Image 1 (tube, one colour):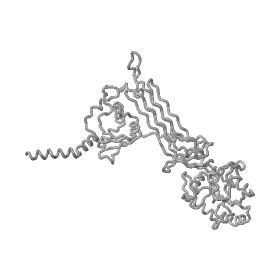
Image 2 (cartoon, helix red, strand yellow; image 1 turned 60 degrees about the vertical axis):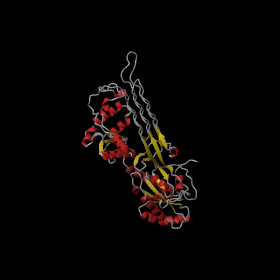
Image 3 (cartoon, rainbow, N blue to C red; image 1 turned 180 degrees about the vertical axis):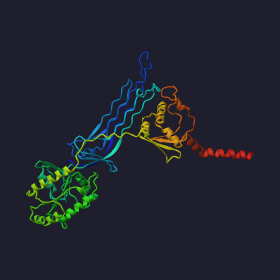
Image 4 (cartoon, one colour; image 1 turned 90 degrees about the vertical axis):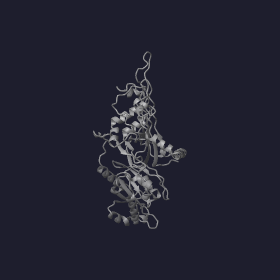
Length: 490
């Protein structure tokens, strides 16, 4: 049996970038022909694509994890690694993408609309791309960046011009079945319709769509009776139609009280899209007038409903009385709503250049480490992820990049002292301003940096280890006994 799923949580993981490679060209009579390490490939993206042939989010309900392919590592001979394959996820038209906290990410409407849900990591540079006048044969390469991983909420909000609202068994499914080619399930018990049904209706030269929203009850805006799962499907509707059952035998029910109850739920519901439901046009349909008692009741309350400024139509889905007038009236309201809406324009590319004095990073004091600092910024954190800390030359290259960016200068201005704790991204280290940019490099072996070996200062981690060692009970006790013996001899 098919299922309709209109809300899922997906875990999108983009592919990691491939690592660059450190390689030296070798051939006969030419053992050192220069660096020829290739770059790593880019990781694949996870992309959401609107497909008109998809009508439910059921696939993501059973397979919520989506991972794109990772890029391949570079090779010698200036051969770059292959890029990872993108993963395209087909979603229905009208899918809204939210963060787990409820923040709107994108509203996917229109065939072919694309959204990169998770960005693939960039590939690392090989040593051929890192060669320069000062470092002609780098003995290191950059690592590929990890791909982005995000949790996203996908909600399907039906794309319809007219939304039918009403209590259970008010005749909404019967109405859409006679006005369009839709074939919803129809029965004489409440909550027969459990999923929204869409139908296409033609009135003259106007073509519009109608959504049959499952029955609402008091408290639906608070989630009672799965009300929130149903109300989201009317957020895009141009016209809201109250379908009122004039032949109900339930005590305490009458057309005016039904309309008041539905309007109260609409007022309490907060849509995730920007538009407010209070501004949408309303139409009241008094249904089931083929029953004599219902026709009398419809004629009795018609004037009261019209006094509220709402258009009223008396219809019967059994005898099809009043359906033609209702169809053309809805077409006129839909056309007016479309004309009042601003014309949709294609997305414009907006260029926002950064200010000339924008350093691209910030430095703040570390509240968890007295005397420590935290460096935040896209570039410093990306450089940390790209560095192989098992290679001293790569570490020296990172120090040069941070110095050229101005990180060391800012640390000095903020009172940083050699040996203080500095945090960049996931890396915590003892800062030593011993490798500033501009110092002439000493030619050493590949993969080494002589500047890093000049540091003889005891770091914070070593001082902490020595402090813990001095606090051991055995060593402390023996030391005290020796001091006491020397004092007795004197």
